[in-house]
Length: 306
Image (cartoon, helix red, strand yellow):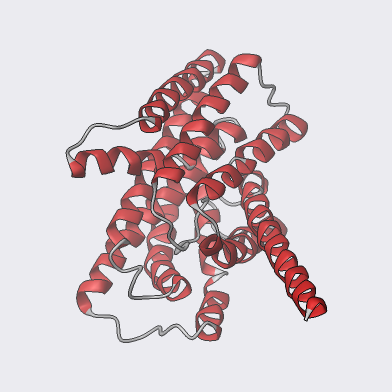
């Protein structure tokens, strides 16, 4: 009996360790996204199209393996998915454009600002004032964003505009999540992501063509690595692990993304961070953690950065 108990404890510890590693590895894979977007020789919106389009057949397989149905969605649900997918397409397009204009650490932090926006939205819907740590999150978010935006404006107007693109991406991602929040309980993560991709891909391709971007890559390597790391490995590991952790732990793990992006920006693109930059990132990162902790625990449903 004692040996059996110890064996079960060892298995439990191993499972817990694998879940932690999956959570960290998923965030690490997603953190490589901004770097890979810069390496592509297509336009930024075209890169967003390819990362979704190439992943689509694999998402269908994942949905089938998970036993999630792909057909039979009511018309109302399809309309909501279409609206949410357009917001998601706008999120990716705006974020990819911003990545090429601002520092990688800023792009990653502002791109993940959807959690803070959802926190604000919750106060509006509930018609109540923040409490305790929620006030702290608001103060940290405003102070951190103000510092980073001010520093970007000091560097160049283009960097500041890049930050605004990334903030817009965070806003659109929050719209996307709010639009589909009622559908998450009815359809699985992979099934919903398949339908989101089906609607988002044509929108991204059309936008890329209207903007006159080069769509067909001459070097497929960055595009392939982008869709594998972001849409398959990163998203797959997060879907596997997120349901097992409280939002606070998810928020803390999320901070690995801007940290890794900032290191890549420094080592590859000579994006030097001053002490004031670090302070701004810490403040905004703290706000993200508190905002995540304030949310109800849900499973990931999108090809997202969270």
